[in-house]
Length: 145
Image 1 (cartoon, helix red, strand yellow):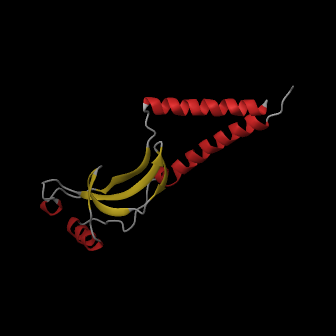
Image 2: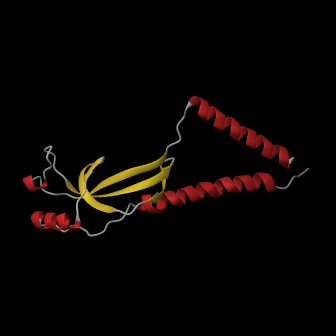
Image 3: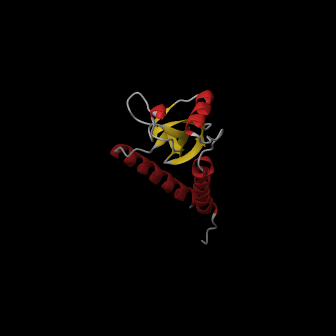
């Protein structure tokens, strides 16, 4: 009885995978750059780029994710924030100069958001536990027959 149940679940899983592949439903995974604004700078000539846009101070890091749940991220770098997709690389000397010009305090270090650092790992771990428990319960449950 146990073997036939496991065999049926395996065939169902393969059938679902084949159906998803046939329809072309993408499973999102990979790396993504996250750029987040952390400090507003005044819109003055000193903080204007060649194309006329202004930049602020932001942090940038890359997350690795599967189904939008991050499981890894790179070291956070302080950058110039233009928008959610664009940033300007700044050296530590440039950051010190910008802080003096704008009369603001720029943090020396920053960290990724809680969900990007830990939250995705917690959710992925809980999902893995649920799947493992389901396998355990279906395979090792006692037969009443």
